[in-house]
Length: 231
Image (cartoon, rainbow, N blue to C red; front, top):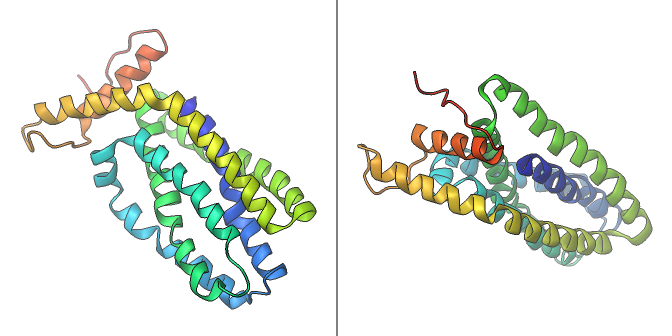
């Protein structure tokens, strides 16, 4: 539930850098569509290394910590976009867009893996549909309605600042809610790593960690559950 709720909230905030940004660049700063295309290309290219190395990232830090770290970047990115002007966009816009990689790719990789690990075996495919609906459909719909209205009424800079404040508060609330889960996941990862014959002492996300996550999810629902990975 927390992961899906987080998807809705995070998706609502990301709308500003996914959609409102390009409207603001063109209508307020007079940026060409070619530059808009380059900004999109830079953001897309920045996701490749984080998708490629997502397994190592999740193994080293855990799902909940990666989700939290990715969300911390959104208010920072929004504040930086508020600083982009017609005088400095030629050198500031593209570096800021490169934050899309650690922000979006890291978050999505962690969310997909986490929802898959926590879902009951018979609902693992459906859980991915729920995550997609939470982030893209519900979060996207709410974000477009809210931020488009604010952009029309207050302009781009005000929209970035309000979205940054919203994202910062949402990230703080998530950190408080997920703190016990971060500790439990870290503990499970350490235990699994110590028991692993492959790389003793290393934090590796493997089947033992997944079983720990599933056991924790079952415990949080207040009922025991047989590990589906065991015969």
